Length: 258
Image (cartoon, rainbow, N blue to C red; front, side, top):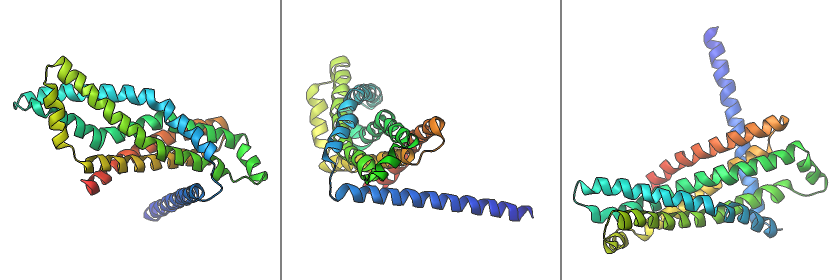
């Protein structure tokens, strides 16, 4: 009997997970379908691009600068043991372009903009504003969700590019100005070591991360329940799940694109 109870519990859990994943999949398909079919909500997209992209520039630049500085400091100390200080530029650039740029940009945007998306949509749900949109014949997914996902797909690759550039110059400040490395060696070795495929892979990663963040954060807000407590729980869950999925997705994308 105990074995049957365990099997029944595991079966119920598997059914709930399957239903939840199916619900998320249908939500993503609907959102992307609404984003690419008219009528287009260009004003909403522009507003969300400003919120996600422009207002995230400060935290992206600050994080990128100190990330590049830390990479340069540790990289210089390690490379000096092997007499390879001239490879500091490629070390910083490749670390940022391939991995840290897309990942850290996605995590910063999740914490700053993704959480706000979940809370905003969740508050609209508990105040029955989404139900009011449906009553007026306005598709809430097209009006609320699709512009946010589209804005993330447009903004995050650009933020990642800014992160990479600022991080490289942060490494330049430490490696060249502070530790005395030759500036020509820093940028010259970087030019020969960084290929276009490295930049392209970083862009693909940032697009995948943008889709994950927009999908999870809007889904959590759209289906929030239980009032203010539900909004709080949904916001926390959205940030945690988005961050974990970004890291998991990064591993698999790296395995495929390497």
